[in-house]
Image (tube, rainbow, N blue to C red):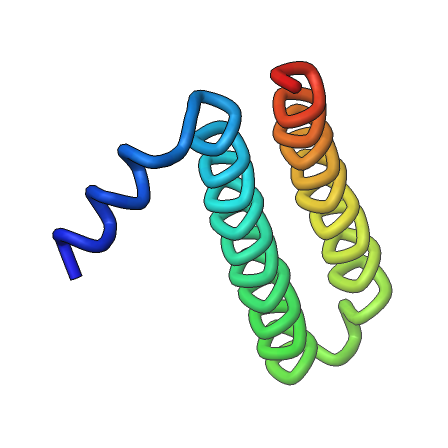
Length: 88
């Protein structure tokens, strides 16, 4: 496996490595964002189950936090794609 990976990296030029890096970065960004959103959702549901009377405030805080996570995710993906197309 190591020999195949090293020969693949040796056969590609700088733009090929850029593409691989952008794909890996995008994967990490999306995985982190999905984990963060699932954590926000699960904790919000848990909080609403503990205090049903505070549902409105908890729901609004959850929506704001999820929007901030999505905004950072879209910005990071934009940077990855700009890097990818700028290096061509």
